[in-house]
Image (tube, rainbow, N blue to C red; front, top):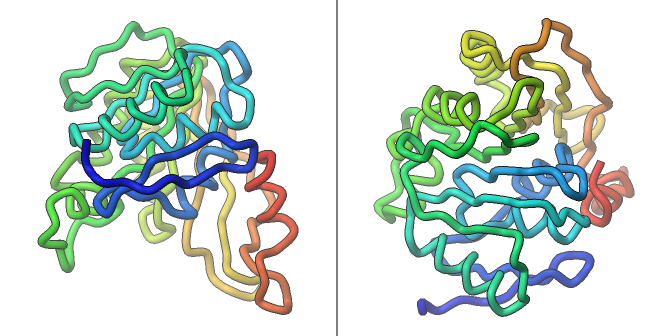
Length: 234
């Protein structure tokens, strides 16, 4: 087993992280924005160290959850975390999401996909795969979500605001209709640095804008809104 450290979530669930496989604010916001109900079937695509799956567990999810990750080192971290905490309902799967078929029965699929299509590419393979679309494209993530979801199932992802038009176009073209969106800003007067979007499979158009997430209050400290999301989701 590779070297790792342990991060504890609000309700005590442990996440194992390494130099190559860490998690950030975007994954915490995504897992709080769109959560499976207690017994629903869920899939975590591009799962990395399994932060989204483990965060759902920390928030009370106990239904079947499949975490799909291309890098075997990320899968190994999640498997170790699940085994040591006796979390039996999370199944880590090391697979290319293009070959992973599933059963088409999931209530919820979530993805924290690679954001960038150009610019500097990290020489660290795991970091480059996580950040740039060379590892998987937005289109491939959306295709996987369509295969995995039941009719009316939800697909949630986070992405950079400059890609909003492309994201909505790609999802709508595959029958994943955008239904909810929220923007994350550092402060009330700032510009968004992230958006969280939920789409539904096979549903009519109709997008609802929800109040912005403000990361900091007027003193520069983490906002009460952000603290609440970290504790109990949205």
